[in-house]
Image (tube, rainbow, N blue to C red; front, side, top):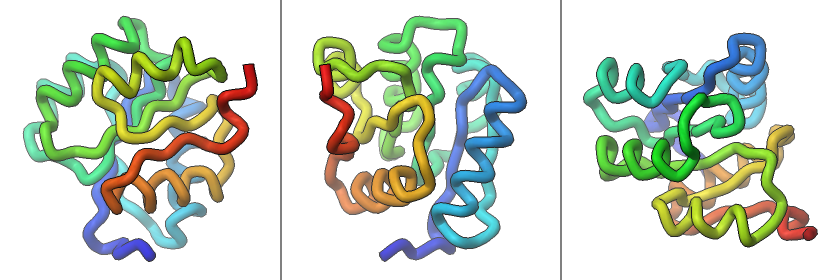
Length: 137
């Protein structure tokens, strides 16, 4: 069960319409108006946010930088923050390096609200999260 009052989210995505869609999914998943801060680049995120959010959603397919570099820089800057990556990968050969770099959860490129809710609950509970169908190839 989520204590929604204690959840702060920082979303990293470089694409505005996608940002709005992910924010809407977050609100639907958690069930309340959740405060979600956003950044368009890893540099912007690090320069503009010093306080660690509960969760950082990294929309890696829409950021103009290496996915591994973004994960490592985010983890270094927000040491206590749980990281959930969103990407197009479905193979463990591509996803596992993201976990090795520091993510706590992984979502496919088009996550539904149930997946987002499960990911948030799992990572905030100290567990990792990967949707059951993700390692299909």
